[in-house]
Length: 112
Image (cartoon, rainbow, N blue to C red; front, top):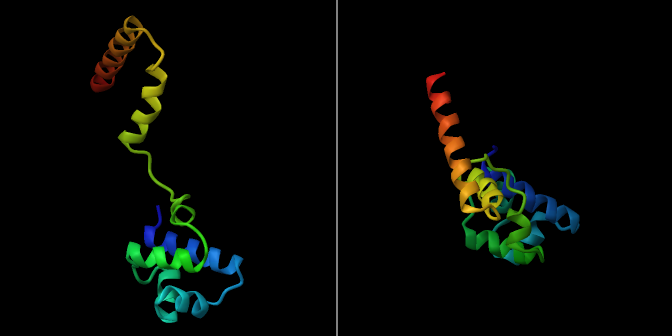
C-alpha cells in the first residue's frame, strides 16, 4: 500500500482539479499557504486532520470523500469480519461442528 499521506494528497488534488480550482484558491480558503498545499498533494508533507478538514471544506467536500477509498491490507480483523456473518444464522450444533473442523484443519496445517 502506498503511503496514506500520498494517497490523501492525490485525493485532494483530484477533488481540486474536478472543481477547476488552483492550489492558491484552495489554500487561501483553507488558511494555509499554496506551497504547503502543493507539498500535501504531492505527499511530501503530512497535514494534520484539522488541516485536511479545512481543505475538505475549501473544496466543499467531506472527509469521508477524501478517506473513503484508502486501500488496506486484509488483516486478521477483516477476516473475522468475513467469518462472523457466516456463522450468524447457524445453530449452536453447527457452530460446534465448524469449530471442530477448523481445529482439525489447523492441526493438519501445523504438521505440514
